[in-house]
Amino acid sequence: MVAVTYELIKTCKQTGARLGRVHTPHGSFETPMFMPVGTLATVKTMSPEELERMGASIILSNTYHLWLRPGEDIVEEAGGLHKFMNWNGSILTDSGGFQVFSLSDLRQIEEEGVHFRNHISGEKLFLSPEKAMRIQNSLGADIMMAFDECPPYPADHDYMKKSVERTSRWAERCLEGHQRPDSQGLFGIIQGGEYEDLRRQSAKDLTSLDFPGYAVGGLSVGEPKDVMNRVLDFTTPLLPNDKPRYLMGVGSPDSLIDGSIRGIDMFDCVLPTRIARNGTCMTSQGRLVVRNAKFARDFRPIDEQCDCHTCRNYSRAYIRHLVKANETFGFRLTTYHNLYFLLKLMRQVREAIREDRLGDFREEFFEKYGFNKP
Ligand SMILES: CCOC(=O)Nc1nc2cc3nc(NC)[nH]c3cc2c(=O)[nH]1
Ligand SMILES: [Zn+2]
Image (cartoon, rainbow, N blue to C red; front, side, top):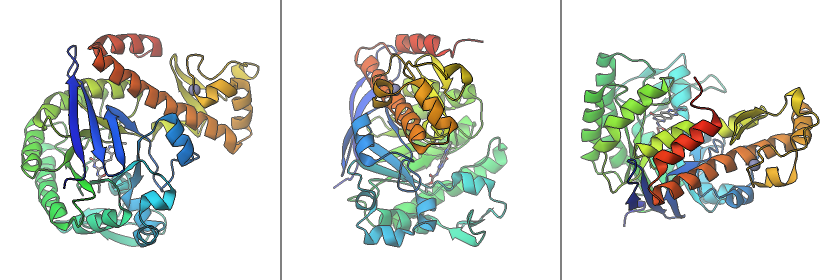
């Protein structure tokens, strides 16, 4: 029994975008889909009930962070992440260590695995493909990610080639180390940086291992957007049509649309929740920094075209007041709106695919949001 399956519903006639449906042991969801990030088993300031009400069907948590705090053993004793955090939708766990790995001063990568420093206590840590599988098996996520190296950007071709080959060897070790393939789907991660030959190599190695889904890794690590789009142009066609494709760490509105056009089905990003906590909101007219003095007496909603709980009940003036006073409720309101905004954007993307007009939707959205302005 395969834990995670994909159903291609249709392809947009105007672009390469796909409308699909992913089935997991905790429900199914249409794609392209955005996944709110809940690093420490909570999407910061949101309750599971609010996530459900806004239309989230899958959220992301981090293996590395939960390994350190509270420990995967405690989560396992609770009956797994779903029970521990009372979330009945789907969960994907990625490493969350990608920032730590690339930034850690002690980071040392060997064939066996990665040595690095605990970002909280400073103690020395070691993670291997086998250990990453054991942790994710204990956490009980519906979708697990293979243990890979996400090289920094830019990286020279020689380094990247060696890294891709090791990541492919690690992918095999992950499949061998995965204890629960019938209840947890393990996705492989394609690396190779901006080099087409290495992306081909990585895709060939991993698709021959027959994972239930594939992620495009090594992007959204500081490269310009046109580099990301170019890499996607030659990478997504290398992936099987009948499996989900997940672009890791991508979540600005323009990248979600451009990634969908290039055949990506799943996205995650901390952007909406992170900027919400400093009072910045995504709106149909572009970004709005609610703490700005000009909103002190502005009693309109954050976004007049938004029908979310925040926009139906609270004003810019009130949210500005809360944010400036560092009131937690203010950040709950901005977070709810930003997540709703992206989930609604993905609904509009799926609608546009159904009607074969995602290219037109892109032009309209970019114009309104201000992406086309030089
Ligand atoms: C054990 C699971 O390993 C991973 O999650 N690896 C992985 N994670 C990534 C996270 C990323 N976040 C961003 N931008 C914010 N880019 C990312 C890339 C990777 C990746 O290549 N590989
Ligand atoms: Zn709203």
